Length: 261
Ligand SMILES: N[C@@H](CCC(=O)N[C@@H](CS)C(=O)NCC(=O)O)C(=O)O
Image (cartoon, rainbow, N blue to C red; front, side, top):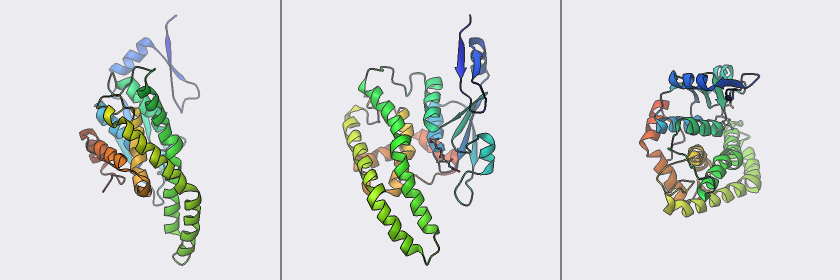
């Protein structure tokens, strides 16, 4: 019996199954990558990765609504209406980390991959790939949303709202962010002599952890620069200086979270 590959589709009630020959066909005729990109968002990780990979893709940029949410058109693309979403032929992929891993595994060849699964580099890469969205992004978003909320409170109530939110921040969000800032800084100190990227492979190559941590650190710097160490700042500058990163920013028509000293 022919081997079958089970592929992922959010919209399909059942997984899509393609045979070997169908897989080859899909690859051959692939015009197929479409990135649904919400402005100033996590989508920037994927745009940067696509530019690094040098694969052809179509970019669809969506503007945020007046209150900063995704527009209704993005809800037509995916049930959650969140970005990024990537389609590759018949496949629809959501969740940044999944998209990053999918792209690197399908299009990365030796680029951006760590083959030795028993190495510390492999473990660090997997850890930071998941840590980005799973652990450090939530307190960053909490502070970002709180700040936004306070600025939308009617002006005469704003001083009170500021005091209340500040109390909450000092008690809960700030200590968390401080711990994350220290962990990241000390890790970047360790990998400094090993290529300087999150996995510390010894080579000058970003891996999935770096694509994931890019938006995370940029937003960290925006909302809590007081907890971001010097090595982390240097790291963000270095990734933003890469030609592929700059092409990504240009194609997106700008990006609000670029790091400014
Ligand atoms: N964990 C998801 C989060 C997706 C997400 O929340 N995306 C934001 C952009 S940064 C979004 O689409 N926000 C618009 C909205 O919620 O309406 C991922 O990593 O893809």
